[in-house]
Length: 314
Image (cartoon, rainbow, N blue to C red; front, side):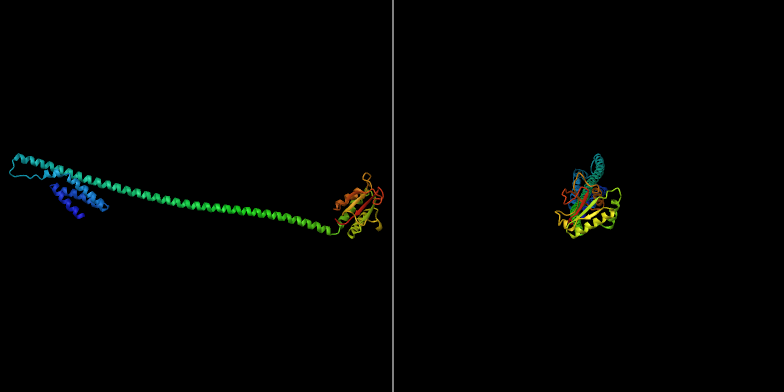
């Protein structure tokens, strides 16, 4: 293809110009066409453009081909020479125009081709950036979903832990209640006593002379534990200076209608002066008497007597 184009250029240049400059101009244009990095179809089109431009010069070619005759009249020869000179200048100008036009066509194609290449590169870069952004967005979305799952898991764990803590607290309270009940039952099973510290404090509280030392009767139920507790109370009161008498065995109550320890008086309006101090002193050491009024002479013989009745263990 290149060789045929060179041959065509030489022929056209020989017909168009009367020297080697025309052929050289056309050949330069053809070399520019061959130097373009394009496919065969585009190169053929551009070659056709170049040939079409040359064919436009047919009238000029016909004029330049008019032969001269040695037998012609001298004025005509002179005119023919002037026409030939003008035609030569025109051919030079037209050759330059053809070269410039061919270069313009080539430059236009190069601009169009490189512009398309730039657009393709920009589009490829934009597509790559969009794909990368989508991938990053997908990764971030996956990370966000994972974090949401972790938050939900932590919330469930916190809720389970709170429920477990509440269960533990409930069980702890129940255990405390059971322990307190067991302690009370244990105390109930243990016999009532007056230890040394309680005895010393009772004697200290009841010994002063300002406290009236009135008569006290001890009435213990027919129960071994009640009898021992009544005897301990009697011992402390005697040590503090009170005249204590135990009701004879045959006159004692076999049982009371309720458990505990009681302090009986005959008349609530005329209480014995030593009843209050005795109740207060025993309360200080943790032994409480339930106060009751018994007007019967069988229970309380007179207004000045305090009866301490000891029933079964509560």
